Image (cartoon, rainbow, N blue to C red; front, side, top):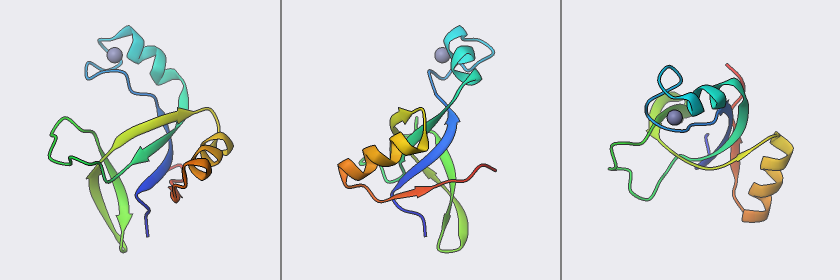
Length: 94
Ligand SMILES: [Zn+2]
């Protein structure tokens, strides 16, 4: 079962233009960070949100998410989550 909060190794997001058209996006795409995701954002109706595939009760579903913070390592991310009292699921590399 996946928790509301998820740690995932992914490229940091900058804007909707993407790495082909935006220089900053291109920089960000080079380096993967550990992202702390909130997969149950307060206003899920907001359509601009990115989606992520998660396992929920044995099925893969797409859910909207917010990135709460980025970290360099899982250790840092886990320490932060612990401090905030968040229970996190860790997504392994696909
Ligand atoms: Zn950008």
